Image 1 (cartoon, rainbow, N blue to C red):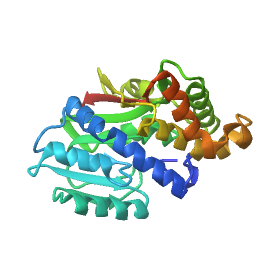
Image 2 (tube, rainbow, N blue to C red; image 1 turned 60 degrees about the vertical axis):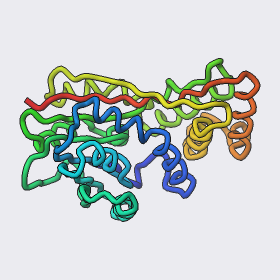
Image 3 (cartoon, rainbow, N blue to C red; image 1 turned 60 degrees about the horizontal axis):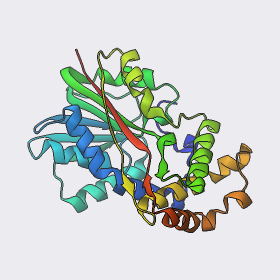
Length: 273
């Protein structure tokens, strides 16, 4: 697999998963932009966003590079690209465009100043080969940066057993689907193995209260992965009781006034030499 093939997407392709992705995007939008700036994106840059999906990262990059910069988002799915174009039009960004393409077999007329991608490498069977193949599209001195999750770091403080158990099931389901739930901590090694020297790393962590979007994201992630949990013998539908999970989790967090920290968003970046 060379791109996030919808048929191999372990989270499924349902309306509920689309809702989950929307909540996830809203939680991580500002953090994504912060990590892009930290990685070295600046005004005036020409940026390639791979596996762009519905365009949230492309729009964040567009805000960073400003009207003098340009962002090209690429994805293999024409349906999500239609939504990306709608999102860009609604945001009145004139410096971002979208094209269909399959990773890493992209051909561009001129090199980019930066290559970015968020939550794409976790879905690839060979992320090193993909990053190595895409780095050729970045000029010497340009930046390569990818962002991904450490899902097992999701937690409630003070600890809430239902949160801990749900996160354990989510992580196990991803492993059952042959995906690393903590791909974020692998990013620096992926860049090194792709031929990029001395990668840097930063982490951002959204958090919320007992009845927040953070709790909703955990419950919706469990819903999307429930079929994998059942197939893998990780948990039964009766045990998860998915229709009440969010309410039960919120109630348990409320009892101890917990703060819920969702998965870490890790960025790793390096300069092309």
